[in-house]
Length: 383
Image 1 (cartoon, rainbow, N blue to C red):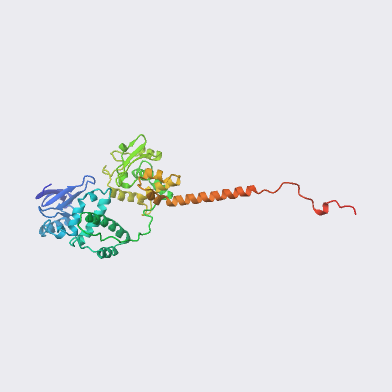
Image 2 (image 1 turned 135 degrees about the vertical axis):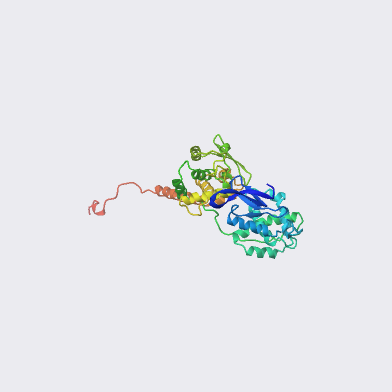
């Protein structure tokens, strides 16, 4: 949509929807969510997001401020100064290294780098000292610091390859990894509580079953449709890893799919009949968990861990589990199943010990024979 005067629908007195003519207002409707967003956009200037609906008090206040403001022309800021951190970050986004990242990684790393760019983009990249990076990491929580350092190292490695900097200022920087088991693994009681509240045939129960019987991430689960299932085999190409998996459909999942109303290419859809975005599905699943009375640490990713735990408890090998989960290394699988392996091995060890003790006890038997008579009952010899 171009710029200039636009007629947009908005609120008016009495709750009626009317068309209001506003200058430099652009309307954008998201196809998946169906929501409409409004922007103040003057040709040659950065666009500004306007909250609320046209005609509403908040919208009109922000619109008036945007009209009266003196915006900075695009490209006039120091963000694009050659040799600056900002210019390097902008170029990095178009690099093959960044574009080859998969899943939600690009969005997460962009968010981290944009925060850094916003505060320090004007600084020269070539003279960025190691001490500056260390001091910056000290201001962050441990998990954030670890994620930021991972994102920045990928960026600065690309800068070294492009000879934008001579040395990597992150070399030698080590962060102590916080002790954590990650997302909570759903217990059997928690799974039973969710199933008791959401019966077979409901969308929440279908979502639970997809997580529990496919062991896939939410980004893959929201894309699964009937077209991916043939002859009892579910074909999934993982968004994060690009790995293609062929997973036999569990009979419980097959029954739930058959009894749940589905009128879309994807099995899980919003109330508007559209496919879920991963973050939108995460919010929806949280609401289903709340309705079932489950604690806040019960998240969808915990079902993936519960599925792997069940496989390990059934005696599946790490290779067998990885064939379903799509993990690229056995070390990642062991991260999920270590506790189960320990418990199973401990039980096996104690059972083996009990068996050895039983065999040893049975091998020691008293000699059979008649018990001797008391001495006073023995015949006396004649003197």
